[in-house]
Length: 125
Image (cartoon, rainbow, N blue to C red; front, top):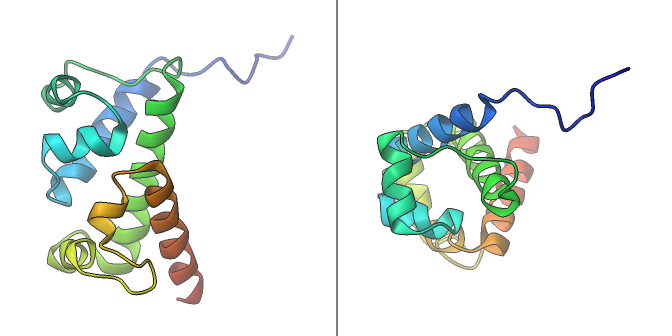
């Protein structure tokens, strides 16, 4: 009998946690900002950074937000890299998004808008 799609490698949560922490570090997001983006408490963000917390698919919202954050990082990295240009883009006012991406990604709607914007830009490259 085939395995269900829900059967997932138990290390997936740890892998996602490492990817989120790495992306946040490369984009210079502090723990408080990451907590806002992922909808987790500052204490949880601290445990995430120290390796004491991993994502779990049963916590669906934070799992999905973590995946979206990594997706945003990957798109931004492909376009600008993860150095100063990416940080400047995140911090700068964006007329197409009608705001600063760093502020927008603190809400689910804003994070998705930024991802769609980056995806559209990548499609032009």
